[in-house]
Length: 70
Image 1 (tube, one colour):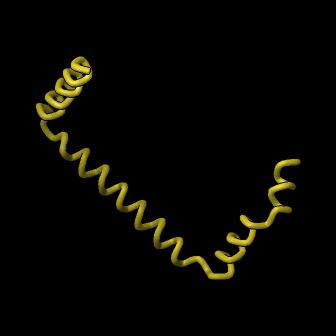
Image 2: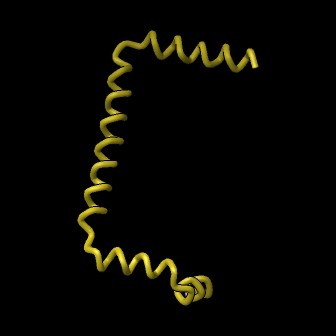
């Protein structure tokens, strides 16, 4: 357990000593938020008929049997 703590402390100290490393944290957060927003918008823009079709295809047993044999 102490070895793991020492390794984490080493990594933490290494990352803190790097100049400009915070840019990667901010960039990663921005990429995540952008993708999350795009996925939410695309989901909300889908027509209700298409969403119902997807919902019903999940519950339909015939489709799952056909995909298993194919």
